[in-house]
Image (cartoon, rainbow, N blue to C red):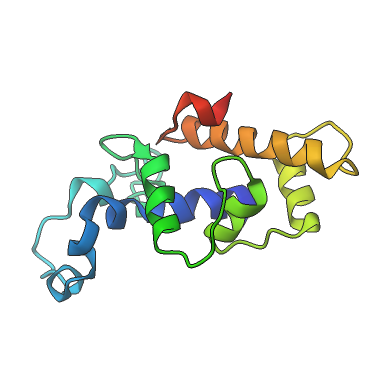
Length: 149
């Protein structure tokens, strides 16, 4: 799985917890649904036209964009470290529990098409943070302009 996919899945997968707030931790919310119970709109998706197999919930389109800032702010508020995820790709990756080593960031840069010098980690990191936010927006995230500019 690509590093960007892990970033996206970590954020989009935390969408329900961010929106549900404390309800997400209640035992009732973790109780299994009967097989006949309808699925929520956020986890259902149409069958693939070519295969007739339903798409996985991880690939499902949400009814509304994922509020990336809300999800990340919620995660940051529960984190004991003071992480500057708004500007630092290293802190963003740490917040999501993803390896933030230089090698991992270089791999992410290759995935996202970075053409600059990966030896200049400061410039690469600035580019990576902006690019990750732009890609999250392209993939159904609601990202403030201040994080994509």
